Length: 486
Image 1: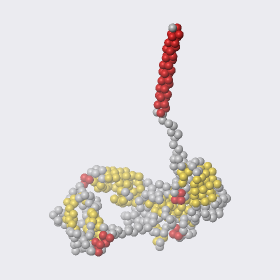
Image 2 (image 1 turned 120 degrees about the vertical axis):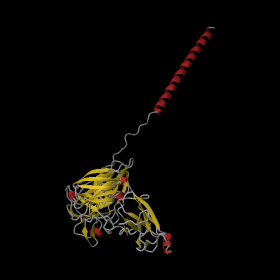
Image 3 (image 1 turned 60 degrees about the vertical axis):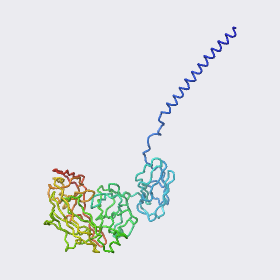
Image 4 (image 1 turned 135 degrees about the vertical axis):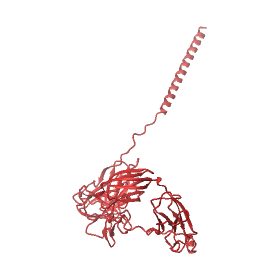
């Protein structure tokens, strides 16, 4: 009996121990689960801040800025792995070489193999533009360059400046600035440039490490020849040679097209058949704003091909009773030979008819309109226009200045500046970019330049883009104070 009691007591104690172990295990399990869940909610480390530092040179053979060297191969080591993008388009070697070098990149090393004999006592510069970038983040080694000299010193001459389009005052960063030695007046037409460089987004350029010498400086498109072999190309020249030195004054060059590019004639089999059959195929579009005529511009009828007027069947501008009005003229635009112009001092809020007889207009093959057209339209009211007073200062520094009001680089209105107050009675509502044309020959329009090709060298007239914009509110007296700085 005592033994049984002892066994019962022992079993009870073991049961208590079992429950205790179970509870402890359960608590441990809960603790572990909670710990794991808590860990799962923690954001893993990001690896640190994003790498924004571009690759940089840590070694080179020959070393950068070495003298008395004439390498066949150049090795450049960087601090990290690199990629190269459009290396041949970006690489500029000055002075230029006849043969294109072979450029290879592997891991963090750049290898350049030169296939030319180098000139003696000459400083060479290799510019890589935006071609070199790191592997991980694509950070660009912007304008990275490498310099060496075959002589005993590195040349320190510098030429810098800006290039703008003469007609618009804007920048075309696709252009190249080239240097040719003086004493060879035909080099720009026949020879590859001795030195060339690209423009940045603001139209600025710089040549560094030049010899102490004089150069002729030009601007040409970035094409295969890098020459001025076509008078329809954009081109600029400096009137006098420039000297490579450390002067702060920068050169200003103005690019122009001596002659416009010829437009390609559009044709199709269907149109040709139509013309051969001599069917009434003439069609036109008109510059009306819906059914409204702008008070400040002429009415235009624009055809698909050059046309001429038939005086036996005149175009007539009439009132709504078809009674002809007075003092209007009809003519074909002498430049756009496909445009009929109706020139009239339009009154506001007035209805008109324009009667265009079937035989009034013909093209070179005597095609005519399908039928007589009568255009009904109304002139716009004065309330859609605003007036403007512009007070000007600083215009005296320009020769025959003209204020240009432009939109999308197209001249909408122009006003000769002869005094410091300009009163404009009517302008359409909208925003205008202001420019100044220096009208050298005082003919009221921009004139292009000429260079070579049997012409006397002539710089183009220049256009300055002003920082100001003119905002016109309809049916409002607008004002602007304009300070013009050169």
